[in-house]
Image (cartoon, rainbow, N blue to C red; front, side, top):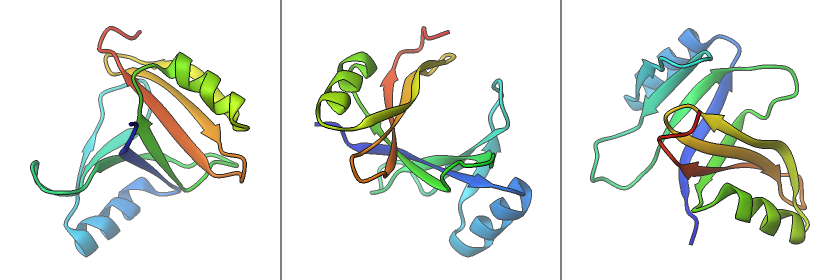
Length: 122
């Protein structure tokens, strides 16, 4: 059963927002060495309940928080989402060295991501 495994938040000023979360919750931030401005967020030690996330620079019309579900196949779940009345908002794309991702809205307009782990994704 797919579960929420990651969250994303967006920020107008990532450095300022990172300081807020560091001071408030003790989260740590590490700039990702990838094709976009993205910071990995660690919310606690491994082995404790909870999930980690990421932060990106906000662009116009983007939601402020998005939860991502781990799925065995993005292609299969795109079909399931559409058949159940959801809408794909960002088609399947590669996250190099991580996997395949797509974004969708449920029938009530809530945004989610789906991620298929595949380190060979390019």
